[in-house]
Length: 222
Picture (cartoon, rainbow, N blue to C red):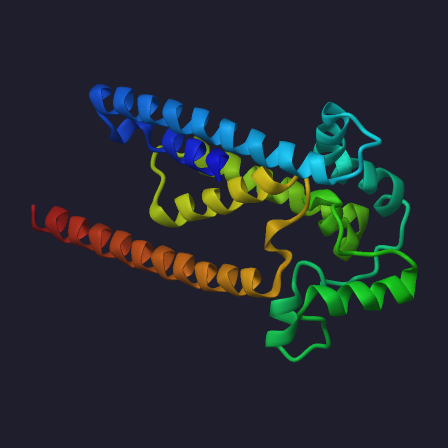
């Protein structure tokens, strides 16, 4: 979540005065220190009640690298046959296709089918590959990258574009573990967000059309 706030700040930095930026940086530094202290306490408590075979540094490294390790060992060479049940379960349910709306149902089904769980950390790329295969996962990643690059290179960032960027930043921030939006109700939220973005794009398109029409009328009168 902290990464999300930092990215929001950098995307909106031109809206703030120098005095406001200085104040935000001070507040951010204080909250960062408090967060690090809180995170350290939580990490220490988890380590104390977990397996003592590893050092704390080893436990932290294992936690942060679990997704890529599992992707390399299990997902890359595994069966990519979940067919949207991981990333598109809400949309499949919406159009009446058979799917699994809970983590437990999905995990048990594919564990019996493939001998491999799907509800573990494979990184967000691993979750894409599980549904769409290696080429499909690569295509989705490139599509997200190109879309973000196009938005960031534009002179103006509208609210619809901003919402899309926040979605991608959130996906990347948790992506070392898994796709944060693979849950059924998270996908429902995405659906609502997409509808709002489409409405915003339509309103902006109509506004631009009216504006051009008014300009043509003024020029014709001249």
